[in-house]
Image (cartoon, rainbow, N blue to C red; front, side):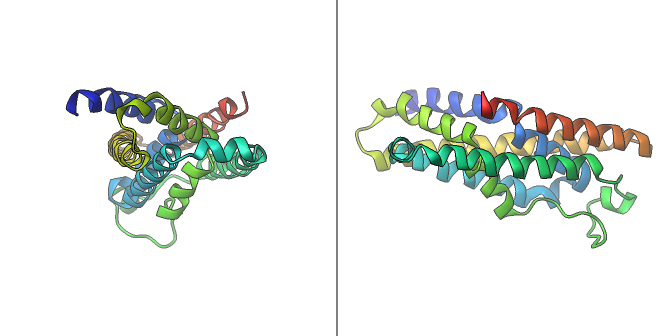
Length: 204
């Protein structure tokens, strides 16, 4: 079993660590809100990957084939959500010193909550394609769809958590280098543009 799990972990780690919408949001959250306040976002992405991967192993592809309009609907909703988030990031003001130290400040913008991050995964057709592809690629591991769902779900959850934590820590480290308002604005606008750019592959 260990020799069969290594390729699965390699696949899920590569998929989770590669730059995209979720990694951009994790970086922005780490920079704006710090690591501790970004934990709900990290957990939402991780659990979202777990459930989406499990669904892929249990036959999500069949549902998409039966109802092709599902993909278009998720693209439209997902695109709208990501564009809105990109605008919020680009327009976000520089955090106050207390905000950078991860203290609660009700007047500041709030980080993306658990359910928002969870929904982000389910509204991302790229996530659907990756998990369905993983289910097809590793179907030979076991004949039991439930066991395959458990294996892929666990691997994607672990990889997603590690990836989001690393990108969030990168954002936090970046925030320590920003010393002026114009630097914060430049970084926020850049992250917003990168998030919009990550939407383009969804429509290709």
